[in-house]
Length: 217
Image (cartoon, rainbow, N blue to C red; front, side):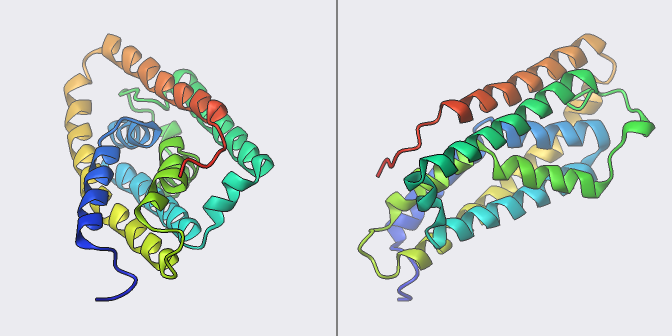
């Protein structure tokens, strides 16, 4: 068996954990639905593509140990928390002030490009607290620190996380479009959803600021 492939029991256990994380509400899921409802599935897919790029970055960092270094360097981890919090707070404000949350009344002057949806997808996953915690504190628990092939196995598990997450988020995008079409005639529901998405972004921004930069494994 390839030394860089974890045991089957580990692959299965990690897969279950991945699916649980993928369906857990967070700023990434909120953003995917928001883009899809506001501007259509192409923008939702672009946001997901950006998020996947962010996941690849997290996978590479975990595989080469840089994520672990962040925990060992309080200053670096603090800077990461602040940047992530500011970014998510900006998204929360945008959701309320400009309809960037889930306002369903289209305005062609405010429609972003697919590139902009992609870039925001990258940013929101690079600063996503549940992804950061998952890769920095949870992912390494599936390998032994004394394993000479630990980096390779971390990369394998990171790719497994990516492959299992893609169909989940694409399903969410497909449902989001239907939800958006159903709620088009309800201004009250639009306002409620805008504030709900803003609350999600703001809550996770506060979560980042309160994370403890310490090793959990």
